[in-house]
Each structure stands twice: as structure tokens, then as C-alpha cells.
Image (cartoon, rainbow, N blue to C red; front, side):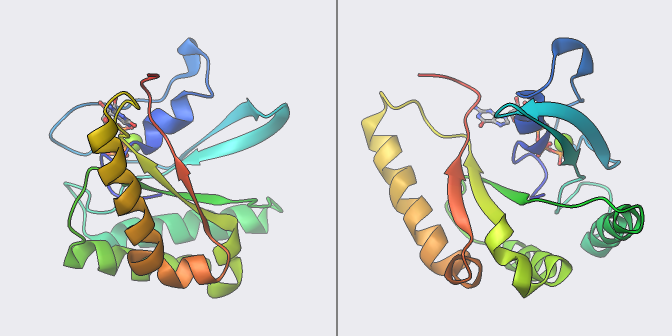
Length: 169
Ligand SMILES: Nc1nc2c(ncn2[C@@H]2O[C@H](COP(=O)(O)OP(=O)(O)OP(=O)(O)O)[C@@H](O)[C@H]2O)c(=O)[nH]1
Ligand SMILES: [Mg+2]
């Protein structure tokens, strides 16, 4: 989960064969409109990866997105599926935390419940190449601040940070 354009679909696609790739894109408008679950092998284990529409979607208000996700999760639970973890993606280049970032995070926290915070990872995307030492340092400092401020409630309950970039240095 996470904001539109933060790289959710791109992240999932790194685990999929070319022919199974989900639609992602550089468009001005949100891309993923439906929840999609795909099978993949991660660390030698067969898992289902679930892609969701983004918060701050171009077309729909936040509550509709949250309700869609909540209904989908409820249906899956009825079917006996187990959710092992949730990734919340955020573009590391984003300097300011906006009102809507906070509203989305609060909505997300309510959706998953405090007792599950340790199973959430805040994964930041769009990391600069390591060769760009200045930008990397800025992003590392921002990551630190995210964990101690924006993501504090999650972090104190065991949520950890991760990094993602499609481009290898
Ligand atoms: N450089 C760089 N580009 C990325 C990264 N992650 C995603 N992108 C690019 O950003 C654009 C948006 O990525 P998507 O994966 O479609 O984003 P999304 O979060 O699924 O967006 P919605 O479906 O609209 O919610 C695509 O052009 C990706 O190639 C990253 O870590 N680094
Ligand atoms: Mg998407």
C-alpha cells in the first residue's frame, strides 16, 4: 500500500516474469485501479503478492480506496487466507510530509490495527544511485526522520524500514 506513484506495482513486478507483469507507469494519472493478487517466489518461498490502488489516487477519494482494500481483506480472511506482512511504500525523494500523508497514514493504521504494526515495513523507493553520495546522505537522513517522526507510532511497535530502487548502481 502507499501513495499513487510510489512504486508499489514496480516493486511487485520485480518478482514476476515478463509475461505476468502488472501495469505500472510514468503517467500523470494513477495506474492501478483494482486490487490484484499474483503468485511469486520470494526467498525460495511461494507467496501471494497483493497490489493495491494508491492513496491520493487521481480519480477516487481516500475513503473509497480504504474501503475497497478493507472489503478485499475481509473477504480473503473469510476464505482462510493469512496475511504475513504489509509493505507501505513511500517515495524517498518526497521532502515534506503533507496533511494528506498524515491522513493516509492514520487511515492505514486504523485499517490494519495496532497489534499488526510489527508486520508492516515502510519501504522507501526512488533511492539515488550510491555513487551520488550527497543525495544518498540526504535520503538517509530523511529515512531516519521518517522513522522517528512520521512513522513513529509504527516504529515503536516494531515496524521496520526497507529500501527499494529499480536501478542498480
Ligand atoms: N527511479 C525509480 N523509478 C521508480 C521506482 N519505483 C517506481 N518507479 C517508476 O515510477 C513510476 C510509477 O511506478 P508505479 O509502480 O506504477 O507506481 P504505483 O505506486 O503502483 O502507482 P499507482 O498504481 O498509481 O498507485 C513508474 O514509471 C516506475 O518505473 C524507483 O524505486 N526508482
Ligand atoms: Mg500501481
